[in-house]
Amino acid sequence: MSEKSWSDAVVGWFIVKDENDAQKSQPETDLTADELINKYAAESPLTGDSGSTKISSAETRNEKFVPENYGTPPVLNGQVDFEAVFETGGVDAEERERVAKAKSLLDSLPENTDVSVKKQIVEASLKAFGVPIEKIIEAGAAEIQALEFYIRSGGSDTEKLLKESSERISQYEQEIQNLRKIMEERVKEQNTVTAVCNQKKLEVQKVLEFFGRDVVAQVVKDSPKLHEPSEEVENS
Image (cartoon, rainbow, N blue to C red; front, side):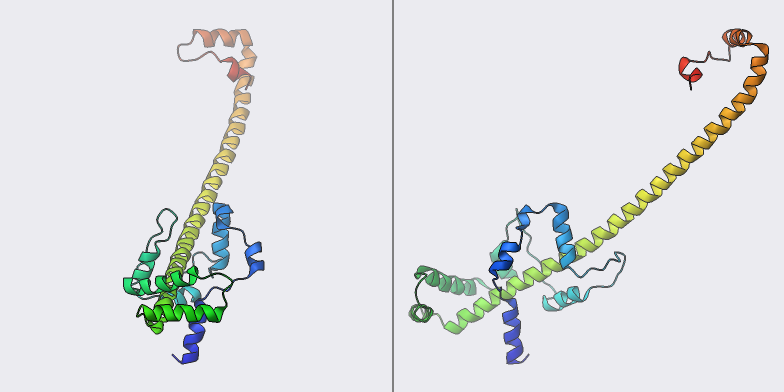
């Protein structure tokens, strides 16, 4: 990779702060579960075809950028274990200590100190500690790269989860539609059966009414195989 390409790649890992965007963006902690799903679904390059087996170009880029055997450290109780992230990303304890020392020196300086003065103080202090500037820069870039590994790996896992979940949701929705269709068909069938049977009852009723209600009632009462119609049946 050329020097310019390396420079562009590293700059691409940096966070660009935009106050307007920061004011407009809603904290994820304020979003509902459905809003979070929609947010990630909108950001991910998944297509509307949830059944597609094609891997998105963004997912492919992530897989190419992230080491093949990279194991994404889990988020524990909503907290990122940065030590694990750096260690998994290939940044050892000594390198992390270098960056931490430089950060500590920077944080100890007054905010209004001129940048050039800050640089002189930090560089002089680090040289006094025997820490090469190049090693700190290398370690810092390695930490940012490790964080980028973590972000992209997690993003790829999230895309896969959304895709698989969308497919399952589609299956459940199809199953619900099938069940609703079965229910509707059964209700329609039962209504038809009820109407036809009531029509048949009217035909038989004409025969019974010919003999008179009192006679029919007495026969029903005396018969061991017949049950006296309940009020509910009579009113149905």
